Length: 315
Image (tube, rainbow, N blue to C red; front, top):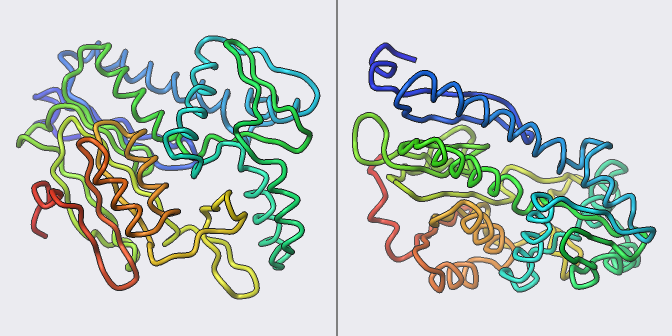
């Protein structure tokens, strides 16, 4: 951090969480308030991971999944909010993003480890364990009624965390901030110089190369795609996003979908849905949504929503 940045109250917090590199930049009225926000940010992220990570055997999420077909699990009001978001994700995406689809992820991960594509009967059997409508949820309680069912919040968890850290900044009267959790981003106000935060969009066709830069303020951005994340089975690439309606990894022209919205959760749902739906239906969904824009990358082209050019900065 430069002396100039300190003089104007710009603080930067870097850490690793949620399986990715994270950066929070913010302008605070004093070092004391900056320290409090920093402490609360790290504490919130730590508690979120401890509760909802599927990689922690003692997490609430793993307890819910281990209790499938056995008993309901009690939830605090805060924990209940995540289950409500599972419902919101499923309904908003019209079932395209299903929080109970984790058994399919396990199936394809296992297939990659043994380097053998799953048989169609394996896929069909696994899909029988999937379906948000089966979940029994009432205030303070959730139950997965069938053995083999499992929840996974990867479809919205990181984006939700971004929005929560922005809300936390507001609670500390911080008016200017950027939260970046592995390229899921939300902004408040502006940086030290200039009226907008400048956020880069990575080139899906070239490693570690920016494709475009976007000027945003009080907006959020999320990117989903199979361009960099995939499984290799029998020498063939299979994308990490799985369409729970078919049981197969998504396969279409889209490498990545980057979406802008008022909040990161909405941007993430739109970008992931677009990767599943494909270019035309994905862009139609963006066009129908309020105050949203998109940038889609294919192997040979980049497609833009109607008004995103207003936020593009020339390279």
